[in-house]
Image (cartoon, rainbow, N blue to C red; front, side, top):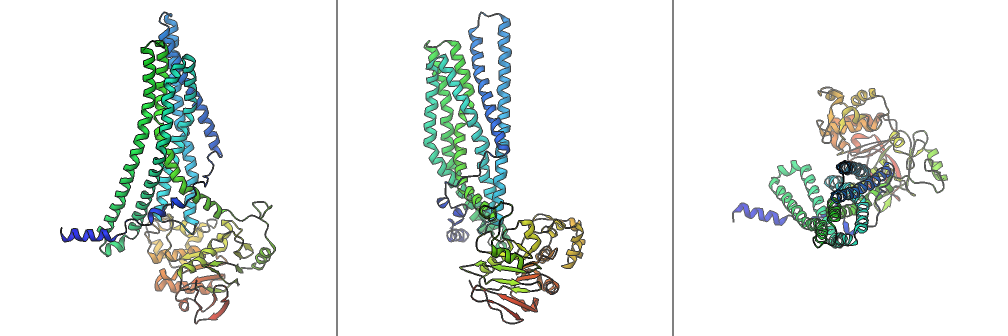
Length: 589
């Protein structure tokens, strides 16, 4: 063994291959399987489902009629040529009907599935943007691709074939029973055995679908984290090591996919055998003279039409198990997102105008004139002291635990509608307000923020799209970005990609300040934004803070370089105290 190989083995053994990312994708064992998915039959999807049913009935009628016409042609050997031509014309029309209904069924089913997935995708992205326990980028991408693809396959390629198969199967068996009960038996028994086989295989198929989904989520998370950390990995000489880790995660996906393919192959094999067994049974009856040749022809035609939908049932069961595996993850996330997004409602009050209690009314009234009132804001295992701030106040939050500091800013930026926390700004209770009212009152700039995809002008006005586009230039000038943006080929229309490229980290931070301060919101939140600004940017921020008319809540490790005075805001029990430049009471969790 060479030294290089030995080193590779050592590195491989030192890496923890079974990371918790396998479980971050959803923690299947803890997810409530009973959590319902959003209703499928809502809005236009009800109409689409009704069209599916009508199409299925029409397709079944065409299939039965095609079989009867074939039997009539075979049994009418002595009929006039004119009658035979009429039957042939009718058969051609019925075959055209089969093709048209099959085409319509596929298109309608796709519309149904895509409309449902669109709703789920919106909920998943909303959860990723607003939940405090939002997953990694790789997990979010995996959910919005693999898991939603499983949902779409079940709705479009699973439910639709079932809707089409049920009337087709019942109608075909009924016609065969009328022609000869023995025909219905030889066709129906293999189908019944197929149902039992599919039921037995569906359990293992579900478990293997869950395992493959976990492995894919783990691989997606690893790839996303590796690409994000690429500069540091390359600088530390770890490219080969990370590629090996990606390979190992990929090998697990391959093994899980092959394992699932075994059950998928079994499902499709038994689905293929059932209609063939029915055809063979009908042929045997004809060979022994138990039914006429024309009747056998009718049976073979009907079974031939049945063969396609029945043969798809193995795939349908596979889609169902993949859907169930995805549902265990998607349903709880969507339920959590809906709970977080739904504002608190007063019992008995209309949804649009919740009835505030007396304290909320007095706090909202007290906050008029640009004041900010915060009560019962949780942080860690305790609460922040109640805060009443007037325009021009500077509120300093600084702590030894960055997670708790972040909780303070998250609670202020996105006030939760619950029974404890209250945030009133300039006459509005923001825990009860919609997003449009909140963004008028609050601006937030954070260190490490990445910008959404769009133009620079859109990024500046993102918080206040209602303002005139002419405010973009002055806003950029206020943070010292006018010359830089003017020097870009497309100026304000330059498209920002990959979190803010082509702007640098310092320029992204300046743009974040411009967006947060646009329209001078009554409450401006600055969470360590000075860490990204650099020396010149901090000088700009100090000048802006000095002239800002509203309340500023700021977290910084260098208050003396930005503030001339501040109010220390601490957890409950420490109180709120005003002070000049000097020592700060640290925020402890």
